[in-house]
Image (cartoon, rainbow, N blue to C red; front, top):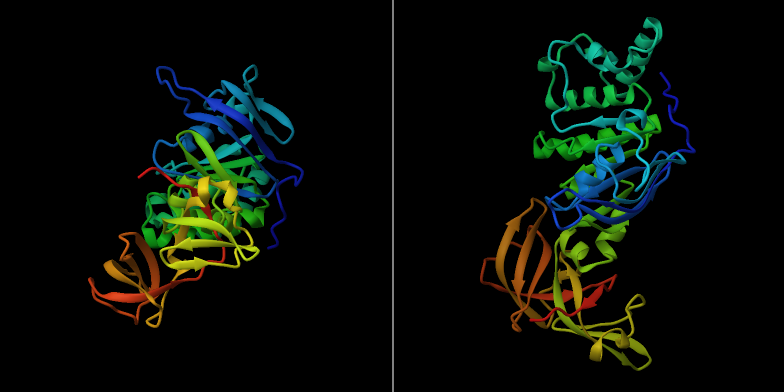
Length: 366
């Protein structure tokens, strides 16, 4: 059966300078957040506990009021300092951590729960459509306890999609599932949402889950949206030091940027980094002194390299090790090394830098 998009492709979500405060707390839970999503796009909010991502999601849902800023959905102002469209009038679907399925109802009746306004025949047709979409048409007469965790999650997704919401919100939807299942289900759910043409906004704390499902990902910290971007840009071109530290594996190494023979050179303990097209000019920092971000995949194990580093820790990842290394200068690095290079802790190995994207930040005080 061919699934036809159930969404108007002109719809979008726009959040501008949104602030949300809780009574009795000195700092805003969400402070000046701004981003936008096109119709059919999947966005993800990620960050440490207490960073404001769930509060932002609840504000979009209409469950929290905006003290300032604006939320516009499909061209309609739904939240501002002076306006608040109630949650039930926003036509937004929600999927929660615990699925919230009715244990006494079978799958088809769980999905049909929000469709009582439709005639019986139309309701049955809609239930069948979304169950086919999530791959559970053959399970429509089973009860939740007869399903796996992943299947229950897909029932919850089908129930949220059934009323054709303008926007779908998902709050830590895979947190109750096994780690190995989360990333696989994230890919499956992405396929389902794309097939439906749905616009969706997720909250998660899991980076691999966010990378698997999101078109754009927003990193939050201290109530502020640090960066809203594609996963590749978050990893290779982080806008703030927090994003650089939060996403992926890496360290900040002392460096100095200098103009040399008509080009920019970055001096580091690993040697000079050259051909840096994206590197800032030396004048960007006092005396060119800065910190450069070195990802684990920027560091190559090379026995012939003149720079040696001592292995402090190693974590086996199957096809590779993640080594934590110490340079003679005392600085630490991380490196992904193929697992057949199995060196002992305390051993010295040769390393060199292969940096395609130079990312620098102001040097933090020692």
